Length: 158
Image 1 (cartoon, rainbow, N blue to C red):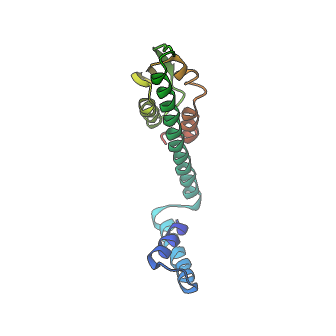
Image 2: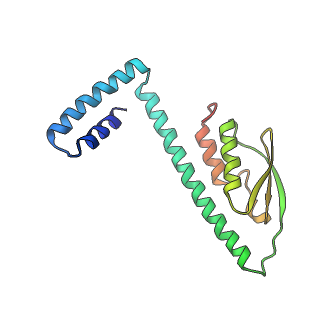
Image 3: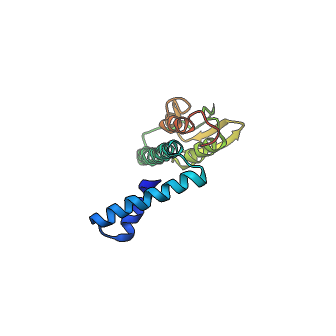
């Protein structure tokens, strides 16, 4: 938290001089100590929250990559008349435990072109896909699920 306060201080001053840096360090340290003391924050919980925020940012980046890859696959399928599709509904049990992670997984499936979540019942997903190859290994090999499990980290919720 003190680092964020210091960065905010420098941004507000719009210049970096020795006076701004020294006074910023002092002010940021004092405000950080007040936060730690009165709000109950600690450097340990702050680092843990920053790691989780970083994991969430990486997850969102992975979602963008997966959506781009799925778009490319769909364009290939749509523009190539010789490619035969094999539509199906695949059912699998969710490897993620928290409700938030299950919801994130459901939204990610719906965002990915060529797939639609048609059923979600107590952690069991039913995904309709335009081609069976699009969902091969979805429950065990998909990077999105691995990232969600890493975010969960054995805790309730994100």
